Image (cartoon, rainbow, N blue to C red; front, top):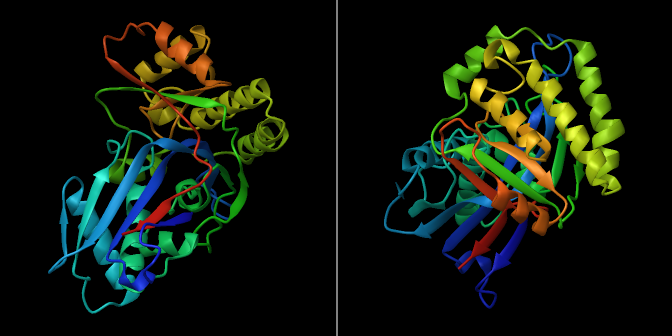
Amino acid sequence: MSEQTSTAEFPRALCRNVSVNAPTRLHFGLLAFGNQEGRNFGGVGLMLKKPRIKVKVKASDSFQTTGIFAERLAEFAEMWKAYTKADSLPNCTLKVTNAPPQHVGLGLGTQLGLSTAEALQRFAMQTGFSAMERAIVVNRAARSAVGTYGFEFGGLIVERGRLPNERISPLECRMEFPKKWRIALIRPEQGSGLSGESETKAFTDIPPVSQKVTDQLLDIIQSQLLPGLTAKDFNSFTNAVESYGHLAGSCFEAIQGGPYNGRALNQRVAWLKKQGARGVGQSSWGPTLFCFFDSKDAAKEFKRNLGTDGSGQKLIVEIVKPDNQGAVVSYS
């Protein structure tokens, strides 16, 4: 996570506005769940330049939240107050100035919570949180910690999952993602993935992941995905992402009806592959799908020639860059 100061001639304590600009994330799939003794959850994900989550704190006469997601900002602010044992919330206005839709697989909730905690901490205390503490403040990373570490470091994140006595999964690996590669995000205008109570219930209803499957997923990461990324071998990397996502998604077949969430997404994945897409996968519960390109020109050509998947739904297709920086904090 980096900082920018727009009032460099003044001490930071005199800066009255704080802005946090955070990346969104893709999640390629979980490593395990339902394990009574070993590690649960874990997985791989990638931080994205777009869409962004932008939260701004501005001094005011009293505490208030405004604009989109105002209620969620207020909830996260109360969590910050309880954690820091502050007597009251600071006199400021909290506002989200940019954000993607909720529950489309891009990790909005985590990034919004982390951004709120960091913005308030910087505004009130002039110092920020560590990656793990930040997640604890707003009660995130109970399952995936990809967004927690991605907020701090950017890039491709691998986290092994957490043991029963661990609050947050430790970071296994963070890697720089090739700047020339591009990612296509494909989702319908309407629809959302599981969240809240529905998501919690899903994890109680789905059979546990066998150790054999977890070992297979780990092998794909260690022997194919990470070596492919290290060598910037586009074909090896995208083949590994596709294999990983299909196997990880198959563990949710009882809920999803296949490796991907619902009949429409399963059909859309097949359609994208027929169009020549590489590394096709579903982020979290969807409905956002993704695929990769080895250049900006290849991505633009793919988007330009992409037809209709036959579902009758209008698709939003966005070509984005990887984010290797993490969240940016600025002052004014």
